[in-house]
Length: 175
Ligand code: GTP
Ligand code: MG
Image (tube, rainbow, N blue to C red; front, side, top):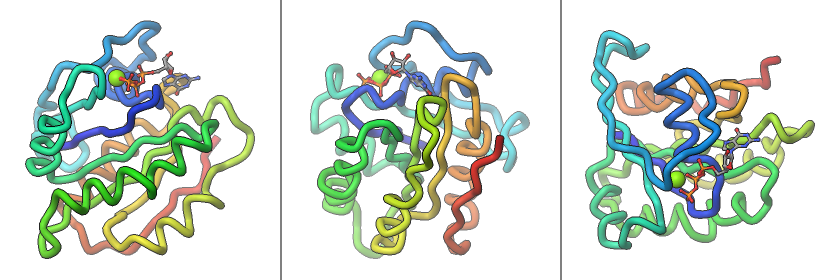
């Protein structure tokens, strides 16, 4: 199970829809339908269930339930929105840690969406966070709009579940 979390229009639903349809949706619902990607079309050959999160449509209790069921959680921020980066450490990581066992922590992936909107990478801000929290398996900057790093994000999420002890890795921006 993969769950995408953030509140403020960072592009969670767009990321899921871009992944599934291989094109950027001009309009998206608040929350994407739950979907299972069959094993044979995923990079690591495991069926993958993707769960979106919408603050508007779901209660805190539903969010907590999804967190407890997840095998990996993608925390999405927007690279052009400082507030959304701050919320990763002020809100999302503590919330997730409070909801999961210390011994069986779920791997986290930091996802910086909307890379099409900025020249500058957010990695300088993200790396100290990566170093501070062991549960963060990897980070990736991507764009639902121009489909950059979308399949990579999916691959990292699968890998985080299947091979969770891998070293921290931040992919270089690829043009
Ligand atoms: P909530 O469900 O309200 O929490 O938002 P969300 O995180 O699901 O974001 P959503 O996918 O609805 O996208 C919010 C807005 O950002 C929409 O107008 C999208 O078109 C836009 N957007 C999403 N991804 C990208 C991207 O990669 N680049 C750009 N430029 N815009 C994007
Ligand atoms: Mg949404």
